[in-house]
Amino acid sequence: MLQSFWLYVWVFIGGGIGSALRYGVSRASFALIGPSFPAGTLFVNIVGCLFMGLVAGWFAYREVGMDQSTKLFLTTGILGGFTTFSAFALDTAVLWQRGEMLTAGLYVSASVIVSIASLFAGLAIMRMVLV
Image (cartoon, rainbow, N blue to C red; front, side, top):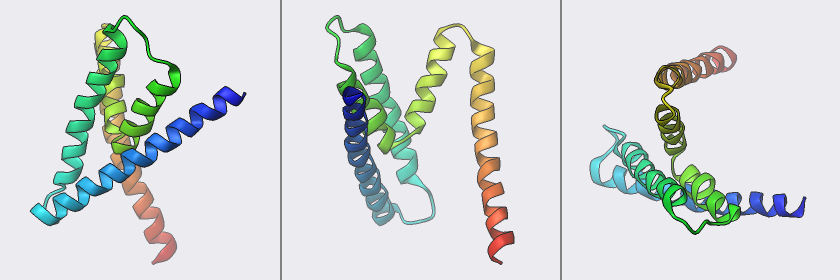
């Protein structure tokens, strides 16, 4: 039970670091490019996916393993705080590498379409409630 508590603490700390990094990138992007294009989000998604691939590859191909707290700190914590898109991309890659192309395609399609539809639903609900 105590070990599980510390895993949450490591994810919490890593998530704070990743979120602060994402905020910094968004501010820098806004200052450099302006509000016309979400370059900061695009950048963190691309860089986050690159680092998720590097970290997942390290875990998969390195003979000496890392402990669970380090894995969670780096992936769920820092990279998850930086961009959840990297976790989505890793899930998709795992399905694809297992040969589950149809499932991967459905996962990508459902995630993108349903997530965007859910955002619009949330906006519509708030518009009805507040306006």
